[in-house]
Image (cartoon, rainbow, N blue to C red):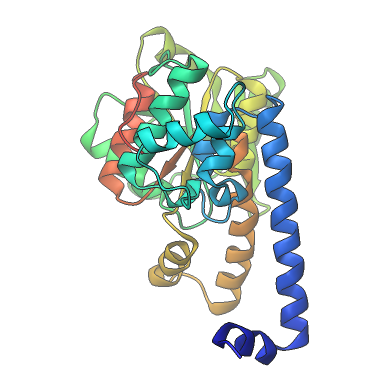
Length: 307
């Protein structure tokens, strides 16, 4: 009896059933992804970006299956392309090295005619799962990239010691907030802790765009979806962790939540990670300075180095 067979026989029935069910679902999800790729329902660049997100089905797609999804590429041509890219046939998209990913992305962009850079967006929205480091990346950009403006929210709560109007928040009363809502002056808004309201004023964003100043809004996923609806030309960037284990480590390491709250936030993070496909770009927060540099490059209309 092999060690693998022994391990399988030693696995409790409920675990074995769950593992088999998960494997079947994964195969179905990959088959559906390949169908959508071949049918042009999803961009190959989008799939390549999604493969950076821990747990995304795109990460499990084999390089050969990915190449075969392109029109006019059969087995022989796919093999030739793969060898030219110096990628093993056993590699999956999520396991590509940095240089392999760069070579593959260059091939894909050339194949589909996608440009290496784009226009500067009027607003860049940074969102992602809990504990991924959105605030840390935004703070780094504030300190090291003075040309980038960070969006200032409006709030109905009173200023705290040291907070200044227009710098930390725009402080308004409930009637003022209601007027902003009624006149469409907010890109997004939410009530926090069932008490105070917060929102993103549209005016400063439009004014910054007219002056050619890059503006960043760091916000949660629900707010990002509201911005998408109210300002479709905004660019939404999803900040992803290097791995699920790293996300757990960051949440535990900051020590601001109890065990029950951490468990709740981690369950929420699983759902939040699945929303990456809604975003225009995905940046992995492996190191804060690198993630910030990639984000600023996108804001400048450049193509950032790496994923």
